[in-house]
View 1 (cartoon, rainbow, N blue to C red):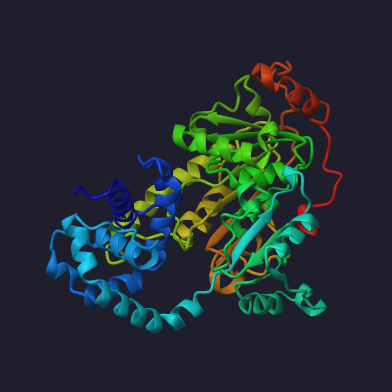
View 2: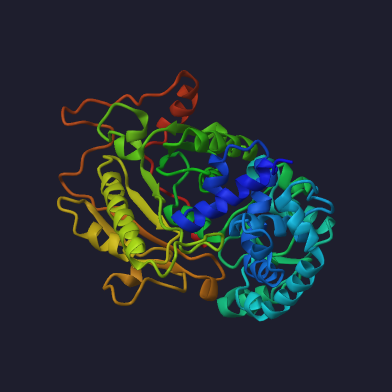
Length: 476
């Protein structure tokens, strides 16, 4: 019998990530397989349990028994056998038969490996962050009440735990699978044990809650767009940050969500629709680098730009990096990414109406973070300056850079998040700064909008010049 496509596709994704670097979400989206939910679950399980699965495969001598089973496929098949649904593997295929014949040895070896890796797993504790989506008709209190009705128990924090980040982290690390608490920095974000089962609940299926890594939520908070403003999310897919921007703006304003991939744009549209954010967002299938900031199109009115470009993804827990022993390949890749990131940031600064730019990556490498900022600070003829991002955040940039205190870093150990970096640039008003919506001839620009966008734009235009009179999202 032919090997099911689900397994070959999952193995191909594992190999692609391992050899070329990349994120799971992107490769799942681009995979030519109809059951993307099943594919995603299998790939993520295989990556999460890779170490004990490999130990079990070695103990069972699978490679010696059938040399045609390559490592990535062996991991996928063993994962399906040991962690999937009962009788998920159907006998008949020669490679599957090899795995099934070794089931007893694999199970014993896997349990032994899990025990040996127990201390490592506890040291790498990463909580699960869940954002309450208030755009679908339920406020935070109502959602919390429904979560409690599912059997979860909210942990009430002490006054000290609410005000001391170290004490709060300690409380998070003691969460059980049935407990949760409110995030220290983000009031509409809840924190669960990593094994908490939230997918499949009616709250998740109806997008009243969104699985949202805290670090990317902080990028949206750092941008802090006021209601009625125009935002450009330059590298928007998959769209989780875009939906949070819409929520922070109370869907009052306009967001241009840009991505150059047709498949990712389709996924982006689905997320926007399911979360109720689509009424204030326009998806553009465009390459941000080729978007003319001096054209007559509506996106040139952007006051805020969120730039989260492609990066190594080295800070993500769901990432399999390039072979660390191949330093030449890593250096070449980082150099290429750095050049692209600098070009994108410089391009963002050419938009005539932009007041604030947030640059962020899910990378731990300075080449993609502080080195990019160092180069941006020296851009000739720039009207932007680096300002302090998220002043209350406890972890700043690398100390060897003179501007480190203005940048933000996040790590699993110190902030209980994925590895992340962000910096904020703001326009410095000068006599040479162009007035809003005026070109060199002093004529009004007419943003290019589809017919369906006209009503939203009219509402947005009335507030175009208003300054942010509200409080910062950071201080909520």
